[in-house]
Amino acid sequence: MSESINLRDVQKRTMQLSEFADGLWDLLIGSIFMVLAFYPITRELLGPFWNLAIFLFLLAFLVVGHLVARHFVSGPRMGYVQPRRTPQTRLLLVVSAVMVLLTLGLVLWTLLGPGGLSSGSEPSTPSLVRSYGVEWMVVFVIGVVFSVMGYRFGVARLFFYGWMLGLANLASVYMVHTAGWTFHVPAAIASGIILVIGFTLLLRFLRNYPIRTQEA
Amino acid sequence: MAKTTGIASDLLDLAEVDRLVHEPARLMILMVLYGVEGADFTFLLNATELTWGNLSSHVTKLEDAGYVKVEKSFVGKKPRTMVQLTDTGRRAIDSYRQTMQGAMKRLG
Image 1 (tube, helix red, strand yellow):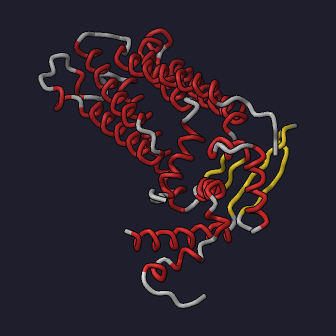
Image 2 (image 1 turned 120 degrees about the vertical axis):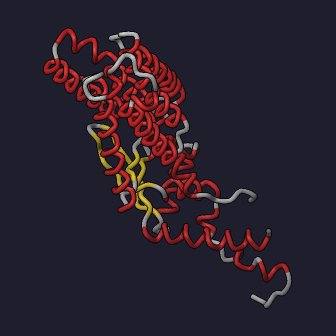
Image 3 (image 1 turned 180 degrees about the horizontal axis):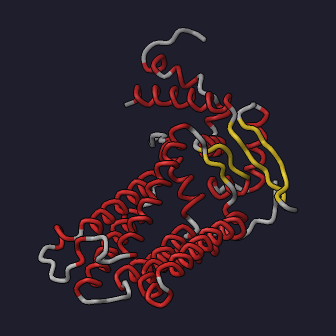
């Protein structure tokens, strides 16, 4: 036996297989950020209150859809795993939830009032770095949150998602201020890339893991 | 056992290794279960790439030794067999790892 036994690697591979092999997380992340990319357009049509209400409804719909898909599509093919609950994992779960909410909050903040909350409201802003404080904070928070999750679960593409989404959000707000774009094109492209990856993974998953009919 | 000297004495630990854990298929099953609270048969099949019969036979051996706990239930109309590592099983893996790591260190 020449290879060392690394239990942490086995744990990561177990998490990859049980959580990320089906592409459903990618589809959820891509869908949420795609909805956010459309947020400024629908806000102009619906007004801030109804737009937020519809956004929250869509968010709930996507999360429920994700859970249903995991139960009926992924579960019978991949099987079920109960994650180990240690004080460390509980703490990590709470911190992750807070960070995800913070990320969503920050993204919403930048989208709700481009110009209202960030100092990047002036079209003639001379320096990108100094003027877009909130957006740079979003880049950093999303990048770090996704990087930590990528490291924790051993899923390399989450690093890419985090920095891409953060920078796309910054580019979107920049384009709103400088070119007057209402639709957040960079954010939509980034979300589209994630959705394509998610669909590809899902198709590969459905092909590689058929439903097993025999039970022990 | 007679007192040994030289190389054999350095690797004497290996003779005491838990053979129930040492078998590759069972080691795979135990390693997967070590990192989680529990997993069902379908997941273990995908993770270990064993056949139903093979997996079933190894899990039965591990259950008989008290290393894993098997619980059968129904989710809707479908049966589900959950396998969990017991404290005895967890200790067996820890002990196995220590023994193997010690032996590998001495081998260089």
